[in-house]
Image 1 (cartoon, rainbow, N blue to C red):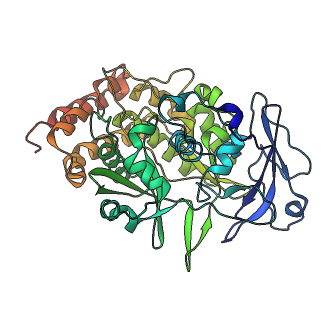
Image 2 (cartoon, one colour):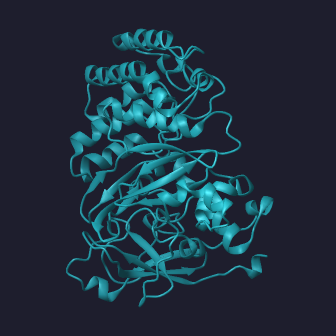
Image 3 (cartoon, rainbow, N blue to C red):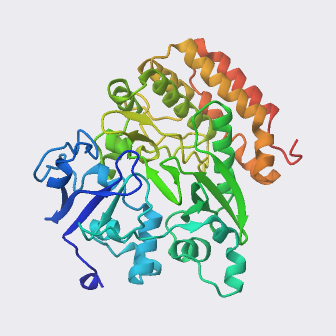
Length: 443
């Protein structure tokens, strides 16, 4: 099988410059010796409006750019590659790989870049040609999504991605099904429930995202739908701006993993403390951003979202400065007991999912203990005050509420080891948890 798979040696990177609705060629990726390197094109470097795809990793200069130590592909390029679900869809759809074989087949990274859809997150795409831009359309419309059951009954085709997500998710496995969806002047990422879910993961993510927004965080908008017997979470795309006549401008983005100069193999070293340092020196509005980022850390702890890895944080890149994107992927994670850790280090080598850990990091976010404690207390009160109303919005039943409350949301472990100056938070969290116990009455 491996010998039959393609092994491309180059791909051209096209990019949407600020305000543009059509892309231009930025340069070329060259695969050699199990590494992928990038070089800007001469025509791009000659443009007055050229901007680096990302600095310091890919500065505007001629020649093949060196890779950071230990990396096999520029991290800013890897940000635009398909995720685990997208990779399994490509293996299944384009190469017929199924079942357990999906875990064994390895494709070259350029194959994933060239086979994935062109409406990808961010402002770059990958093509086989430097002359002709031929988009690979994989986006479904919201009408197609909502009418998917009727279309199947009438033997009408669905887009490949929508068909995979709705009807073949369990056979592909390995990641949560998702698809890109367009509705008029809006675009969404659609996430689907999975047959293996032991609780309503999609509704839980809706609840967490809505509560985060109500707590004052800058969060992507979410809508919950029910399609073909499955829950579907629609998340507003913030990297697209409608320009009329079915035209769109794109916003360049990089992940925190890229900002930190790391790749997946080094992701365990990703640290909020280091990210705060980058915010202080490279972001357009560091003071506001530091407070927002600290609030995201504490809300993730309170909501049981331990999957806050560095690709689940991102910033817009305008060629000179960074701006934090709205929060996304705030999803309570399965939890057997109380003790838990965040995916990123919070302060020093401590990643424990405790308020005390966050308070120890507060000075790195220009917050004193009083301000940090007040911020956390406000989040706890919002979770308690809005819990049932938001669960009602999500149509979440009593069983799922009871499963999440006190386990994912406001787990007792969050207040373990609180310093005496912040002991009031222990009392507050316990009081809210006991007053809103998610019991079967749903009150």
